[in-house]
Length: 101
Image (cartoon, rainbow, N blue to C red; front, side, top):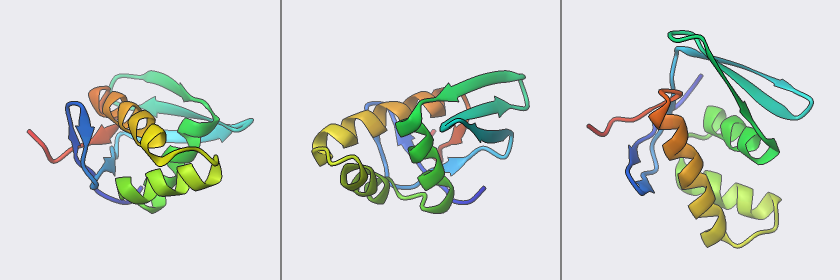
């Protein structure tokens, strides 16, 4: 899993990284994530799954927001708010690593 990303409370910076402790599989359009350290499973909806896929290949928040806004034909500011909320949540559960203290 590639990339490195940074998360701040209320605002996500452009650089993030998927934790090496996370494995995932896409089933019927939704990602199932397993945190290997604590054994907790997480499920992402279709949009969350697309963010996860983009994070794997393009760990740049701004590009992820632009891609999602384009693919879902939605306003970039709305997408940015939603993507930031998802990335903050994923970071708080240790699924995404942050280089912020």
